[in-house]
Image 1 (cartoon, rainbow, N blue to C red):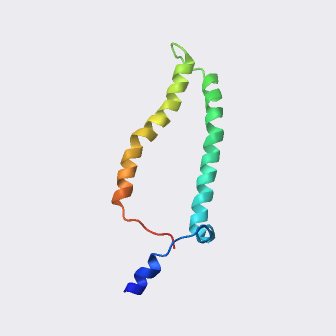
Image 2: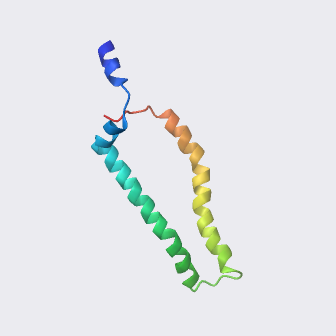
Length: 94
């Protein structure tokens, strides 16, 4: 039993992490998602300006509101996700 615990508690090096297929798939998919979002946001503002919405007032306020919704959701949900992450038992990459 002690031998199994010693095997589970060895430190994970960068080389071990980079050779793990599941870890690399997660890192690559996260990178692609961030790249898509980086291209999406500037294009979205231009598209929203071109839309023929009947908005009384400045369109910049409404466009800013669209982007503020994402920031608000992120800020509101982060503490709950952190709480849930503490409740879920940690699974180590193998």
